[in-house]
Amino acid sequence: KLFSLRRTCFPGSLRMAGRKFACGVAAACVVGLGLRAGFVAPSGPSSLSSRGAAEVQLRGAPLSGVESLEQEATSAWSSAVRFFGGAVLGAVLIAGAAGPARADLEDTLIPVDGKGKTATLTKEQLVRAKRLFNNACAICHVGGGNRTNQNVGLGMEELQGGLPTRATVEGIVNFLNAPVTYDGLKDVSETHPSIKSADLFPKMRSMKQQDLVDISMYILYQNFTIPEKWGGGKQYY
Image (cartoon, rainbow, N blue to C red; front, side, top):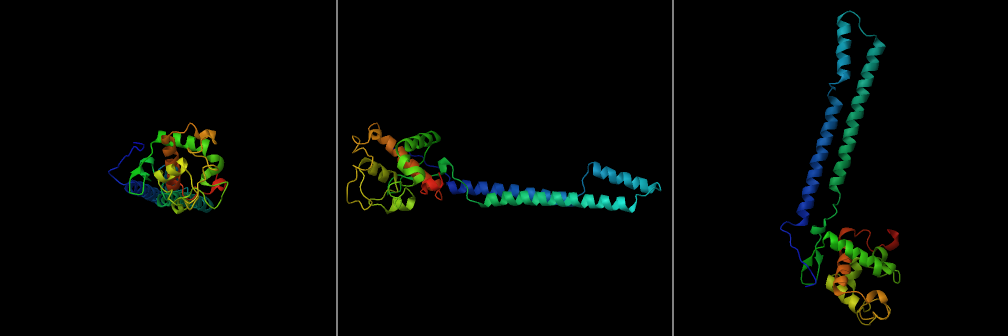
C-alpha cells in the first residue's frame, strides 16, 4: 500500500485543549505572583532596613520627615513595578494560550480519498516530502501559489473546486500522473509536469508513485497547518 495509516485513540483537539488549559493555569499563577509581589512586603534587605529604622526611632533618633517620605515612595514604586510586571507577563501567557495552537504531526489527519480514509506524516516523511516539493514543484508553486495562473493556487479552496477534486492525496496523485484543466475537460500534460509527459520534463522521469504521494501529503499538510499563508505564494515566502 502507498499509504501508511495511523489511528490515534484521542483526537488532536483534546490534546490541544489540554495544552491551552495548562498554559492558562500557568498564566494565572504568574498573575497571582505579580499581585502578591505588589502587596506583600519583601523579606530581604528592605525589611531589615525598616526594622533598623524602627529600632533607631525607639532609641530616640527618629528619621527625618524627608527620609521617611523617600523610603515610602521607593517602596511604593517597587511594589507597583513588580505588580505590573507580573500582570503583563500573565496577560501575555493568557493571550498565547487563547490563540490557535499549531497541530502536531500526529494530530494532522490528511484525507487520502473521498471516502473518509486519512493518513498522517512522520517527521522523516515531512522532511522528505518538503525536499521533493521544493525540488520539483516550488519553481512554479512556491508557498502554494501558482506562478503561471495566480487564480488557481494550491490552497484548499482551489483544490476542492477542481474537477475532479484535488483536495485529497489520491486527487493530487491522479493529477500529477495525468493533469487536466481545472474543469477536467482537457489534457494539459504537455504544459504541466507529470508522469505522462516525463519525456518532456526530466525531473519527472525519476519520480516514483510514493514520491507523488509524499508531495501530495505535503501540500495538504501545509493547508491544514498554515492555511493563512499557504496559497499566498511569494507574499509570505
